[in-house]
Amino acid sequence: MDYGWAFARRISCSEEDKRQCLHLISDILVLAKKARSLGLLSLIEYIEECPTPFLKKGLQLIVDGEKPHAVREILEIAILAGGFRGRELLERCIILEGLMSVQVGLNPKSIKEMLLAFLGEESARTYEAEFRDSAGRDMDTFLKTLEQSQPPSPAPSRLNRLMGKLSDEEMALCLKEISTMELAKALRVMTANNQKRIFSALPKRSAAFLREALEQMGAVTPEELVEAQERIEAVLKDLSVPKPSSGPAN
Image 1 (spheres, rainbow, N blue to C red):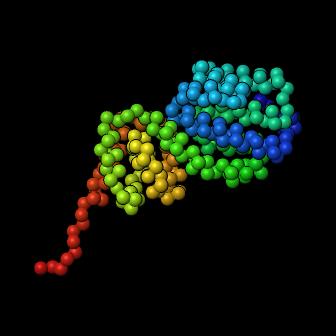
Image 2 (image 1 turned 30 degrees about the vertical axis):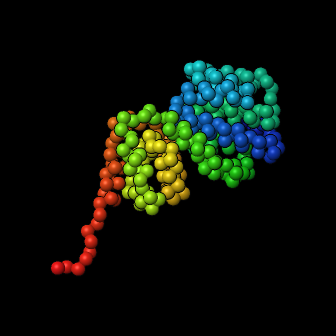
Image 3 (image 1 turned 90 degrees about the vertical axis):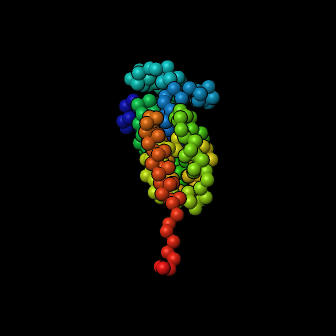
């Protein structure tokens, strides 16, 4: 697409129309995070329930294995042939660029910034105000996706049992001693209850860092998973060792 001044005039629409597009951007970002964690074929289940025909068409092309340049060409032709203007054109361009970014595995943060650029600064501020905490609102969905993204480990149960025995205070203390990357690797095979407890025990900023690490992390090998679990178990063991009493000397 040629995003020049002529395009800017054709895509012009009301602030209310732009506001309606914010939900579309949010949906595309959910797809981007899912594809990054589970792969492009994980988007198949969304196609059947997709309410937007143009988005559905693009997703089908992607999961069918079409090359990115072919997907772009097909979608651009569909846009140009339709002679769309205003919100109809804006939505289709957001879908086009969003899907192309998803297909090549672009970072969801970069996808968000690019798509919001179509709407202007005011709408971008509205998005940040209304959708900034969407990660919190869909935490259950995120954790479910996380659980599906890694095959069961041959030995995750011991760590799950150890984490499950910790009090909230002990959990918070333990998390201070574990690196974000090690925790991100091990979190993939923890129980849903332990996952929720960990996110709840972390400070808001640390929880955001952990989620970002999980979203950007590819598949974890069994060897990496075992190593991460062993390091966390070592931390738990160190924290559980009773400290020598400081009673009076004999």
